[in-house]
Length: 279
Ligand code: KIV
Image (tube, rainbow, N blue to C red):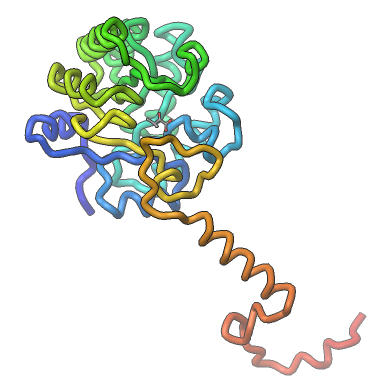
């Protein structure tokens, strides 16, 4: 089994120019599969809320839900670098709350690091968490927890002024001690400038090829979430039709009595006939 990566390994990968591949995971079975495919880290994203829990946004996701799923991911992939996503309301109120909730990801779910959304307004919180021993990944650009304030799920940093603010936020988060930075839905040239400005790795999602690494929601990549597919997502395969076809076949076979057949049953080795009619 490959050695579990550390924060230092991610900084080193940036230096050597090796790209970093991250995917989301929410349960043990998928985590085990993904970890076996050479993915560098697993993100237990708060996208959990929409992809797995059926909420209409990431906002309702609670700390307890995140911990429950992050712990499952850790059990499924003991050798993976696992990042827990701080849900809305778990870090905005105070640095103290952020340290308590970030600490839960490390202690209860055995995550290696946490991620949180926001720019300059969260830098003091990030610094306090890092000082408390919690490795933090930042997340700027489109920040889904505050998407309504940003005018919806839209590309961010399109004009010079907002792009300038984003570069400042990226520098501030690095200065605060973040070990990496997710850039979501921003123009590729802005992502390039941020990537070249920072010494910590940038992880893009809808931010073009110049980032140090990429992250995708696994259910999007595998074509298992049909409600909404962002245009930057590459659907590598479409599992939904495959799942529907095979589950339909199963249900038909159960109804027809052709499943289970002899090959999927335990043969009877004893004469049970005297049990017939017993009260
Ligand atoms: O919640 C999530 O899955 C994320 C990634 C898409 C970056 O934050």
